[in-house]
Amino acid sequence: MGHRFEFLKRLGERGPLAFHLIALAGILFLAGCGENPAALNQAALECVQKEDLAGADRLLRQALAAAPTNKTLLANLIEVYFREKKWEEAVQLLKKVQTVEGLGDDPDFQKRLAEAYVMKGDSGQAFAVLKTLLERDPENEYLLFLQGIAAISPEPAVEALNKALRLNPDRKETYLALARAQSWQGDLIGARSTLTVWNQRTGNNLDTFLIDVALYLRDNDLQTARKTLSEAPAELADNPLVRLYGAYIDLTERAIATAQATFEGLADEPTVATRAKLGAALCYLMGDDPNRAIETCEEVIADSPAEAAAFCLKGLGELKRLQRFLAKKSFEQSLALNPDQPTIRALVDRLGGR
Image 1 (cartoon, rainbow, N blue to C red):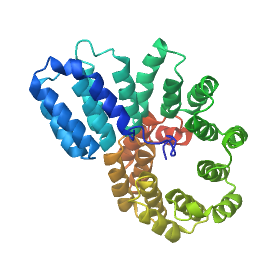
Image 2: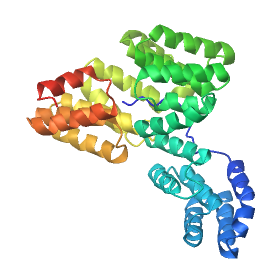
Image 3: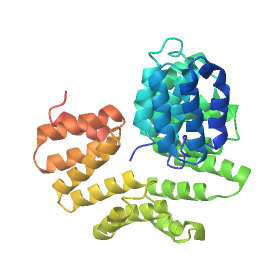
């Protein structure tokens, strides 16, 4: 269901200090733009302090209309987009920044572009930007961490995350992302070893509990996964991931109606919505309702156009409707996003290949 690590904290959820510093550092830049952009920028900052992000968004766009190449205004609007989780808007603005003389090669803006691609779910674009940045700064631990998150196959993810850990062994998210990548690679022993190291450093925590369950699922050890879930800490009783994993087990055990009800009940939970909808789509396929499965996949694709699994399930639905040409096209789109799908590649070859 996509390989971005689910426990990665939203990169855009920063404290107020980051925005303050951007604003303060830009006073000299704004001084040359006339009072209006400076006043609008200050008003936008006040909106951010009041958590009025829509107001800050509007004011900064108004300021940029008067000073469209001002670095500080651009940086502030990008920050607001991150806080609003407007990843597509952030990407488009950052791509525009690349065309501005003097800003196109700015590493801070390029790093933000990589972050925006990661958060949008466009791993291929993120990986390409990060590759360029790492050619300039190969020992940058944070860039390596992002590259591990953005990798579209497990080997480069594991390589980047291991190097990031050697440079900075204190970033919790790197351990968790590495365990996820090792599991994706099929190295379940390595994944558990990584979690053990992290637990030894910090003590058991909720994140590692959830990944441990995911590893049991990856290993098809449903009995242990079910038992572990039943012993979940009280803090996780209503956790969406716990419910999602339970639905996966129900689905594997052919309790389709139970799994479907859980998936549908999680469709509006932001942290698991995409996977819940894809789980529901799989239930619809297993229940011989390809139309509903395709509709659900199209909803996911509209929100997450880089979600390879959505195209894969959509293709299976189209195949059930005997729409071989459309199915082949969907499978090829899935492979373009995630080439590491030998079964789907073989299916494409059977449908006519390329």
